[in-house]
Length: 384
Image (cartoon, rainbow, N blue to C red):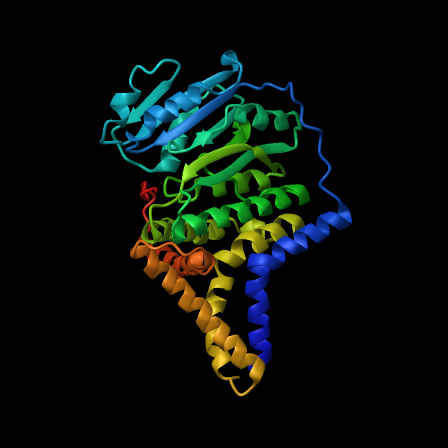
């Protein structure tokens, strides 16, 4: 019984992090990519580019410049910056910027609330949301908009890339590796049927499908895109539309960011019950549970049980090696964290260190979700 349970838990963790990607590739190979209308390169719907921001004085003028340089017909593009209770010079710097509709509220209510406030002012058929500390490539809007020629497409998300120094630390290096893998999975999801959760750094939706979010929403990008998917529309992945940002400054800052995401994951799961219905929506449920739910819940909780159950089987050589491997992996993770704090960079430790952070955040995020202590207000992580 102990041995079979251990094998099952190992398979669960493997499937959540690697096996799902393999399974999706196999399914696409068998059934082919989801049939869709070919993207129309000349399709130019009106767009409202919305940039919510809070205390972004260090980045905001660069973001304005980046937004104004985007290649899209000016008569079809509206640019909105909404400052959510910023108490630095963000609002002052945005004031009187040409070609920008600046909306400022003295009340700090969080990103979801800021997005909701911007919608009545948006004139575009397509809403494009972008973070204030990210740069997007000049033709990103062209690349996103072409997919909306297909009426079954409800949203299009771009690719997030991490800009890291040549001598990156465990946090920077691990985050960069994670997002390269995550981008591959998003493309596979899109090819199979739909992306389950757009990247908040660059995401877009049809305005007609946008739902006002609950003010306490933690993962606005995930919730909005999943609700559109549950209406019967697809979220398409566009890898050439790129949002670039720097990594978290260190392991502690990345852990803080991950805890918020995981608390938001638990909140999202509690509000997206229809996405679990494997009988009514088998493909959505398959992608949602495999790509998101397992990582935010069962896979992380399986790890300590794998370690403990392994102890009961140390009388067999295979399980002795497995136990030593686990000990070495977790020691590597802690060493990666330690050496980064000391200013040393050891690439070999990036993956175990980041994996450990991700799964530790699931437990801490779950605790915040149960206590209701995760605020929806902006919780800025310092960037490298």
